[in-house]
Length: 247
Image (cartoon, rainbow, N blue to C red; front, side, top):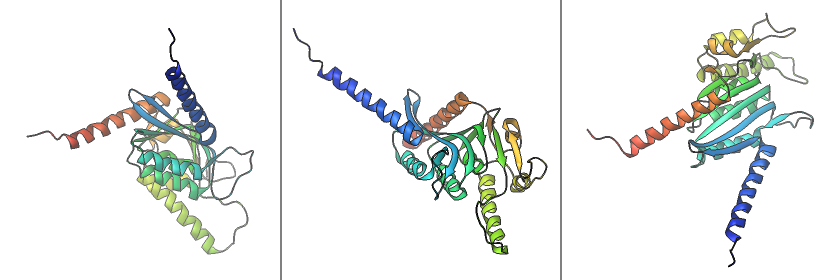
């Protein structure tokens, strides 16, 4: 008696193709989608320097905004993905690109949770608070400082007015997406007592939570558990709408 192994071979090939696709997603876009009995999560990482309109040298570790933005749009539209986990370990980078990503995350209806690991510096601060709920590791740090510009600038009052407007945009966004007051954030941004030869403030895990910048101190399991709770609450609300309770 002979057995047909075509179905078994086809299943193995499909599994290998799916694993290959996951590996390519991690290598190319630093993202992955995971499925479990609790739901389907998509994880993206924002690491190194956020790259904007100018391509950085190849030796720099970067997060390209043109990779992240379409991913966010696809996640929001997807019927399969239940939640988004954003892992951050970034030194900052392009202000316009960072704010663009942060605005996209903050505008999502899909449950979102961020986790700062290592550092969430400069434009990494708006990125960290853009999620619906934010976590920071106990040893992680966040640097808040004024807007900087590399290269030659025109030394006229209009240039400094432009800087102030950009800073106002950052302050307004952070205040709107966290519990910190705009005045307090501006004070931290312009502090002269911490950074050598620079202006700004460095916050560590507990400090970032105490001032209302980040929601909780925690690790990966805390962030994932929180995200699943948010997913469950969203599903419960949808069920209530579909099947309203009668009086």
